[in-house]
Image (tube, rainbow, N blue to C red; front, side):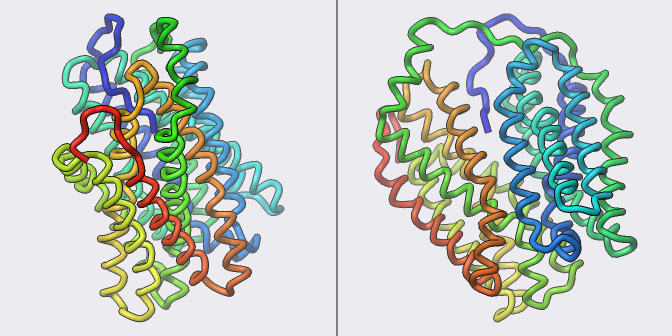
Length: 400
């Protein structure tokens, strides 16, 4: 995801901590109640509609497409209208999917909700904090981005409990209601006005097109795509895969949320490690660890709870790190004036292609008769990213 590395070139007013905390709360509720809970909801949806990975793919594609256009909308309509529309779409789409009796209605609900999540969480949050929070900007962004990781640990267990007490449809409706009731009043605390971006000089506009021909950029783009496919392939299948190996629903949801929770300290430790050994070496280690953690998911049936917690530790750490060290490596190999646009392009391409993973999981499960084939393929994709990353030769100073 795009992360601003430098202060805004134009004067801005420190918005204080309340807007940061509010944006973090909105992201936690919206992403936690939708995106991060889809893996928990998937078994219930599949029982009614058959393989439901296509619905998750549509959600991710819509979320990625919204992220491409929300920056323009923030500059035209203003922050609060964009946030509010995104929140309402997130809740309405999830409610529609919860009440769907036919597969096309389910897909439409997933698409609406994905558009809403893309418009109300990461991109507008980063834009607002970058413009309005000058003092301790790094800490403000860490708090905000940490909320997206915490969403995957805090909300899915509640959704799983609601499914146990009622049904998956009731759980989705509760998520939609929580978003609809809690988030719109919070928008009033967010600074209003448009989130404009200062114009770039002509040299800065030309630099990205030159960098597109760089072998380094293409290798990073391909490696990050492989890693995102591997992550998404497990993210939305982990609960169902663990249950298929004999783990109860509550235990599978606990393992899933614990793996996401591990990502919080992993981000801090991974940043310090990348600063010490270099982004390239750090990303290679991440790819290898992700491959091992992915294969560990299949060990639950053979190793019992030891295999489950091995997956939680290895995959939980590795899945949180590619966006962090990948962005650092990209900054090492491109010109400074091209970095922002190339990071945005890299994020859009990786997100759109990574959205195909749930659909591919369904197809590979049908072909292989279980999760053995898709999980092995995703581990191989993570492993294949390592030599691509190793072939990148940073043009700037890099310890790696």
